[in-house]
Length: 343
Image (cartoon, rainbow, N blue to C red):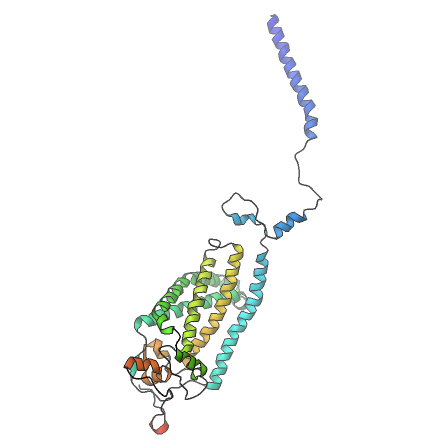
């Protein structure tokens, strides 16, 4: 009995001590709150680091998420929507204006000796395939890229948000997938034509006489490709290669470059594309309405012999085993009249 009474009092004492400790410790706990961020202090250094793009620690695989503010993005956006868009539109408009003025002054470059009716194989089927693969893919890339850069200013007010959104999404897929055909075309062009586009002494003569483009009756000698075509070839290969490289960086962002490098790649991609489009406008003009008989080279692969002798006299001599032409100027046809193109 005595033991039972002592045990009961011991339990009451333990409960009483626990209650006293709890109620006595509560005020002290309330007086020791968890630390809070400093308020009203000077955090300029911290925010300066954030504004300068300092990368903080993150536990996720994407370390770019540690950059709270990417200040270069504002610079990139202003430059893209400002000088790149403005000067790019001037390049496009300027190339069209220059071509139109040249056509108005010079007119169509005719075969001055007239059509001979004799044909020479200029390009075989595979060469024409490579040319049209590169040309068609480039046109699709140019149109879809121009929509991405200028579409919201030109097309959006005309067709409305819904149609423009669908069109731009389609242009995005066309741009991405067509780029692989363009890259293949650039590679094949380099392989099959690089040996014909190495500089020669005849190129200096051609350049000195402006290719005969500005003077009637002047046809400087040229091999399979003249100096102008060689310059275009190397421009397409080099600029097309850089476009392909920057395009891959944009297609797979942050795989091989950080955010700032990706932004620089986009600006370089846009600038190169504008310059290349401007140059191709002149190429399309010369290859179609600008020069009589020129389209046949890539159309059927066969060109008239008189056309070939006037524009690529050295190449014709090599093909036929003849001595190089002494006088590149064409001989006028009998009677002083140009022969009509054979039916």
